[in-house]
Amino acid sequence: MKGNEHSSRESRLGKREKRKKTNIILNSLIALVILLIIVVSAKIFFGGNNDEALQTDEQTASENEIKENENKTDDQAGDLEQEKEDEEEIEKAREGEEQAAEEKEEAEKAEEESEEDEKVVTEGGSSPDVEKTIENPAWEPVGTSQSGEHTAVYDQSAVDWQEMLQAISYATGVDQGNMTVWFLGNNGPNKSVGTISTKDQSEKYRVYIDWVDGQGWKPVKVEVLNEIN
Image (cartoon, rainbow, N blue to C red; front, side, top):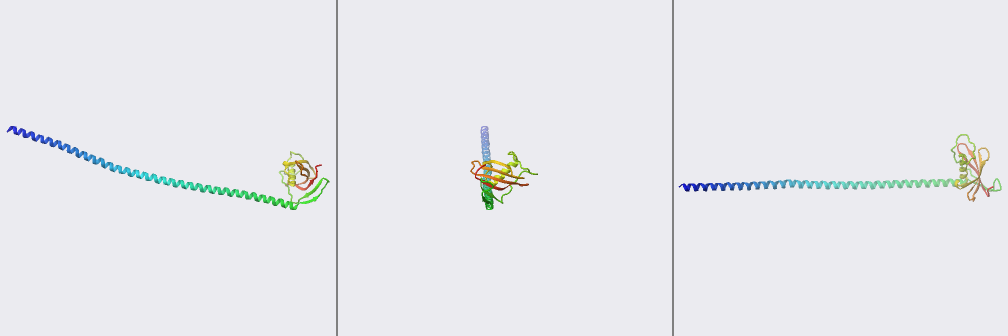
């Protein structure tokens, strides 16, 4: 009997140990399953958020790029419009300058024609070497930088001398750079007379000029010469 009881006790202990091991294995499997569920859920949850965040970031970047491109397009359009306006302003200024130059040229031409119309030309003159004499009431004083009481100064370095040559050039049309002065001297109180020619002597003149206070020298008569005496 004792032998049977001992054998039965060992059998119960063996079963209890097997049940205990089985419980440990089952609990471990359950814990592992729960852990896997947690990991998968976390991955799904946070991964989804990351995807949404990434999608949002991409959308924002795309919108910013579109806005930036729109701004660039607007800036380029503004620059083109400004360039067009600048070109139009430059063109208007150029046209204005051309028109002013044309008007000035026309006015000078009209003035010259008016002076030509008023010229009085007679054959001969004060001496045998005079081919013809020209007088023109349209002639004006050439202006002066001098002030106060005037006394004619026949010195090539004097301002008065240069202003007399200016009046002679005005009356004859001979530029001072192409002018040879043969004589320039006194012809009475505030009156002078000069004999000049072009450098090649193709044109020869004797010019009479009078001083007008505050206005400078004024041509009064030009004699076209046959020769220089």
